[in-house]
Image 1 (cartoon, helix red, strand yellow):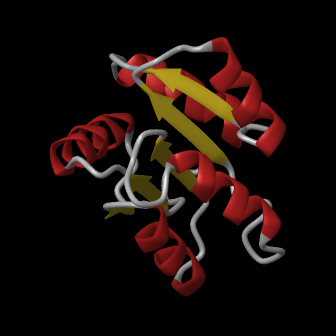
Image 2: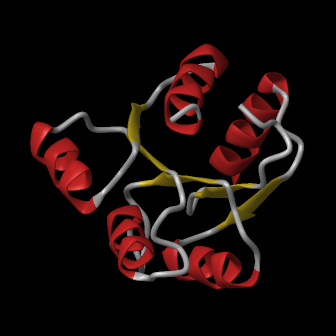
Length: 125
């Protein structure tokens, strides 16, 4: 796992971005950007190459699920590892995200150990 990999954290709740950034720092990542919704994230992704995207599911106006579908349909971004975070562990959401090409899934609340485990499973492939 390359800790210098640029990571993009996407959440419409600034506090959550801060929490995830802090968890990523605990793990050892220091190159972390934030975006407040899917469209802001897409704009950042088109300007900088990220090695990992960690996105909340529930955001307005563009959800994490919509962002995932956009990323997977863009040839320049399609291979970017993508982890979805959600407060709900609805089976249909997990299935929909898997079908859309998500690499992993985290249900809130979670801690640094869970985040590290999910990131390792995505980035060690």
